[in-house]
Image (cartoon, rainbow, N blue to C red; front, side):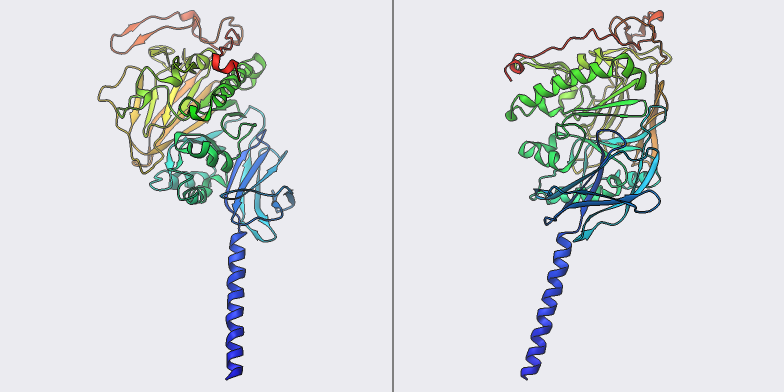
Length: 473
């Protein structure tokens, strides 16, 4: 009897030990793997999480076989989970790699990624969307299939993740990050911040994602082929309880960034400038979004709080396309500045447009469902849809950009268009200024200075405007 008791006790102890080992291995197992560009497109940042702390963060990688090891000896940082980051620098451009990450206590499965060319003479493709939740993420299966078929050089998620990352003490964010791993572990997952990330001063967004620059992903830029992408936060206009410093720092950075990217030598390399931020300047949604009113503070600023808007800044430095989300719909605008349509011509509105082209793509899928539109189509709105889906961009070359909208509802492309610009480096005038005409679709009132068709120029006449609140910071 005593012998049976001893054997039984040993069995229980061994079973508990096995359970403890299994639990321990799980706690150290990497999860939520995602990629982003570092300071160049040849630098890839790999970010993942573990439930328990490890002594090091390690990635093993190679092209034909696993042949290199990169170790970050700094301890992972605790934020809800332990967050690990490893930067793989100076990767071979136009090459694909296999990789896996973790530590001696646990390894991820093997993934792959492809490094784009560093120069501008190639044609990158991207998927772009915002407002994708953990539940009702209708676009996710299609995006995952596209990524596995090597359709994209990168993906841009333009704000509003999971609904919300911080919910259930961050567990909802953990599940969302696991969910997007089917995309983000294979292509750089570039992000911007939205209103649903505001909790705890946007800390879940700032800690979970790794973007270029020093702003914790609130604003940054990167070059991809002939395109210079500029990301920024629209939320600095709405969450002033966190202070004016984020707004002031970003506005100064944006002005300097756009001035630099508009210099002749930089515009020659990357002639396309595309911005992305969460809340739109314009929209025709009827759900009381600020974008459906002319008093939009992102567009025109807020004089009561001494905040400067961004429309004039983007217009004066020749931003070509402005991508937005927040409205749970898709909408393409005619080239527009200050509620005035400034098409290239009557027959070719997007050829040499006289103002930026706005695209709203916030219908990736979420529990809040689609947004409805005003019954009347404004004259500045070219196409709109309530379908769930996402936008695809292909920068063919220095003169041609191609956009299309994929509908997850219809499993088909529902809108497509080109932006084309004929370049003439000898034009000696400001980028858009004094190069306008107006065209109304309702009145057919059309006038044009034909000799001013080309608006590709490099003059930096715009001087930085500073609000008084920024002067004291």
